[in-house]
Image 1: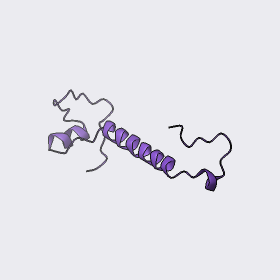
Image 2: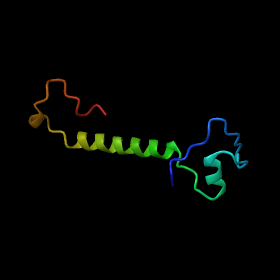
Image 3: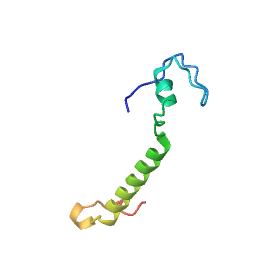
Length: 75
């Protein structure tokens, strides 16, 4: 799938494709719709939470020479 974009004045409304727009022509010919941003956002968020939880679980105050105000268990 190419990175074809809708033209600036595309008049597409739901499945009513504008047949002068390159992206609408691709969609009308069966090209799959692009993935939305929401799934990627939640996957990235879950990955970051997992990374942070791992960092807290493996934290060693002696090894990292923490100050009196250790943030190891703030989460």
